[in-house]
Length: 496
Image 1 (cartoon, rainbow, N blue to C red):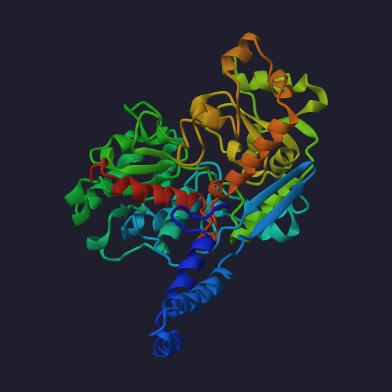
Image 2: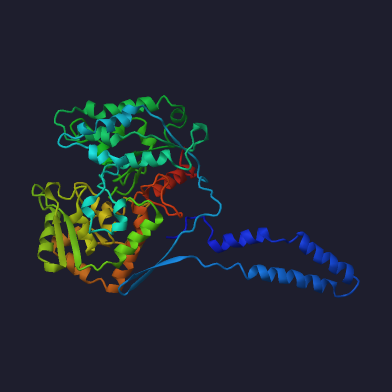
């Protein structure tokens, strides 16, 4: 992976270090110069001799200045992928964009919600999903699918768990301050997704019940000095569900109304699906099961997925919606069934592709392309499962990716084509194009470059297990989000 932005390459750092250590005026060199002066200064060769000594000293320095940057070479049949190892910064200046303050909010807004894990869902307990700091139980079902050396980094992680992951990491963040007067960004560790999610499928919950905890949180935060000073412009929060779960416009609609409450209009929100028309919403990757501890584990996984033989051209993990007229997922399943061995599908009906789906990961590891139509909303966790498995996503709605994760995935048409394939769903519906026809038309060299790009993106799509993040200067999804928030608040064009 390339070094963090702003970190000088190792050759530059070595040059500065050696230059500052050179004895340009030390006793040895001064003695030589004085000796030459006493013997020869009367002669016309004095300047020449002094110049010669200095030149020899400089030549010795220059002969040691070159140092190659380390490389790991990943080999794949007919493909060689070179990925540079990011060196550790020589002089750390990690908080140039300011310090973070994490509110210590009353436990009813986070800890007590976790303690009530068995009551957060009307059908099943959420206790396993909330265990292990939000990572869930170890993914024992992946034995034989992922390398043994990486099994300890795979978990049965719930897709709606980002609130816990961000809170844990921010408490240990190197730029955290306990002095609110020194902070330039303020984090609200409210688990709103758990609070609202508890009532989403309840037939008896009123709109007031769905909103009560959110209303109480805003009443509490309004009493805090930093909030009253800025009106929330320098505050941010992680919401573990999609934005539409917090945008109820009237009492009869779905979800809560947290994002429509007075005060929330200024807060930056990190969500797994954003509203493309609201700049305060920032899309972050869905949490998936891979939580590496080190940059070395990330590189090992990259090498593994890049070297795999992929016998299946197209894959799709999903379920048709019989209740939806002209369901596009049903259309894709039909086309897949007609493609013979070129396409494989996993039926995800009945929760089959939940947090413990070895079948889904195995499918993506065997595939070159993975189909990613919109799910119940515009985005799907499946896209991130697919990409971390090293497969190329095929997108049918621009709002499913390109307008969602702008801090993570290149969204401009030319750049988006480096890591994904876009096929307009309307052309598929009309029969103007077939999915297989489009994908069959992509040459092997293009596929190789696209797979390399997907694999290169993997570090930014996963959440590290270590509290301090990945080492060697490698950023994960959490780092990208926090750095983006700090830059946003530091920006001259952003009101604070």
